[in-house]
Image (cartoon, rainbow, N blue to C red):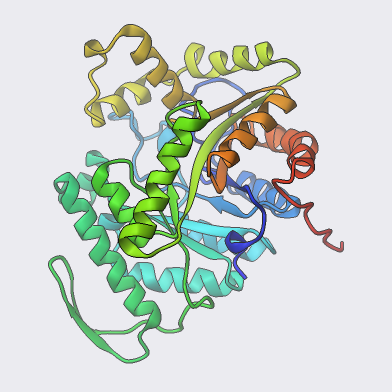
Length: 372
């Protein structure tokens, strides 16, 4: 069974370990992209009983005319997933695909291959494509916002037919024409779980209709507001599409002996060592005009993106982090992807200190012991 379907109330995953992480920071202690780093962190999370490791897809860094910038040095998600799947035993392994950059026949074949390598632990994170410089590099059109989701829905429809149909089929859609479509072998799983992050009304509707895991950016630290955001997805999926979905988010972890020390380190890497070129470029791509915002709002937005692509902050002592994770779970969050600046040290500290508290609070069961 795919570990994403396991019994833990709050599931855990690693995020962005196929690149330099989620933080846009130039702090010296931040790691750089390497296969060895990806492998050892995935194996550590696997031993600890984490449910997922999720790569991101990035074909070009945000900083213009800087091809060697660390933010654009990212391992391909599918071949990376194949390697991680072969080197782990229990953890769910994702690939991430921007639909305009890959034909669905290729995505279907690669997904099935990784699923077979993993023995049924694969999942696919699908993205409609929003980064104009990346799409221009592929010669792919930058579609109007809602049309991106129409394209993504058809792209996914073709993939799922390729996973399931045993006879050749023709498909004639608005975006794709497939003659004699077939893909063999089939995946190990009868249904490969799909993740999608949709924040706009159209994106939210797509995720509620097509995704098993709806990925959200938690925008508040108030439990009632988080619950309202989460239940919006779950209610739409249930009421409009008759589906039961899970809602995941991502978090940035800063664990220290005191809350003050943790907050100081958050400021160090996300403000004092902000990767300003990349953050400025991201804000331009999003159409965000900081000049039109109150200064404190613009500063908070910059810091949260620099710290971890808008991630919810798990910043403080072991107890503070456990409290905040318990709040997310109580608000309906089913799983969270974790990021750090220093993944090696941060993951080790989290496994040693935070996991036992989550187990004591009934959010997770102890990981099964794996024989040496």
